[in-house]
Image (cartoon, rainbow, N blue to C red):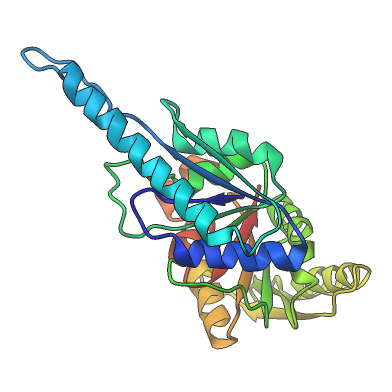
Length: 271
């Protein structure tokens, strides 16, 4: 399932989704959603029925344009496609999460230019991860191909990374090279080495030859993991989502949030 952004060019997103669907021999479902104008009541101010109707027509036009882009882009590339869309009062992450019941994987982008005051057309990635119940592949806006020359698993022995690694198996099996990396302090490094060694043994049972690696923790795991991925030309980063409470991750700047919103490479996560 691929989530299209309304009012924007989705060519790169659709190119990557089509290429991946062909490699997996998969059906591709396009989905788009938006919220109608939010009506706030106050003394002496109201929205006219005409304005609300204009907003509805504008939303329908944007959804129709997204569907046309989806169908025209994929009609000669993917054997089986389907389309779903809605104007919904619910948060977009809730709608997309419900639609993900029909998918093995949900593909979307991170819109770094979006306004935090406009949730009507831009899904909150953190909320989507919490709602979907499916692995999510986040891609940079300008990426048109998932090369899979090097995939890296950011291991921390949490429930979330165990789930994400299992969900990522079909992609890891396509990768030319796979690394299992855990950041650890001096006290933790022996235990960490045992963990990543055992993960690579498990991956081997699924036909994946992976290299274990323990990297010294510098205190900011998001920066360290991101720098390592840059230095080693990682195409796909696999991470677990929200190892702590959602509120704590957001306030303290959690590893998950920092890596997801960075999105300089394709990232797969699940919870």
